[in-house]
Amino acid sequence: TVAAVMNDNPNIDPKQLYMTLNWWKLYETERAMESRWKWHPETIRDILYAICKQLSKRYADKIVFGEFEALQVFLASIDCVHFEWQECRTDPG
Image 1 (spheres, rainbow, N blue to C red):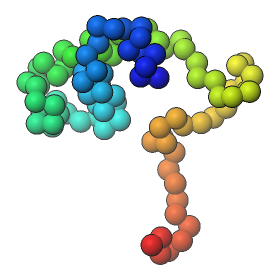
Image 2 (image 1 turned 60 degrees about the vertical axis):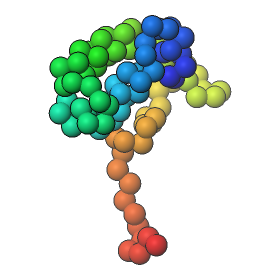
Image 3 (image 1 turned 135 degrees about the vertical axis):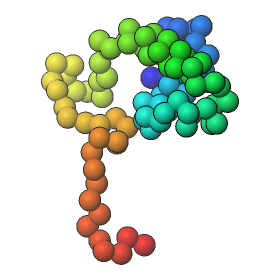
Image 4 (image 1 turned 135 degrees about the horizontal axis):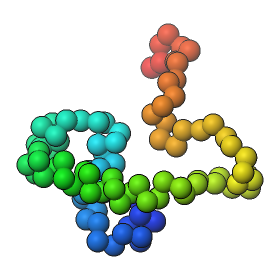
């Protein structure tokens, strides 16, 4: 979670962390991010790489939901980005 990352890395600026998470989700170019985050594109690149390097230390961490066994694997998407949803109705309104 964001709180765990901030606890492990108190020197991370929250704005930079959220910019990195936003970049992971949208995968915008540095030029597109420049207007939203108000930094120079090369500064954005340096920030993203530095934050990603710090976040990669948590790569081995596992997310466990409730009473499930830690060794049992469940296919799930945490952010709902990687699974498409097909609307079965023709008029979703």
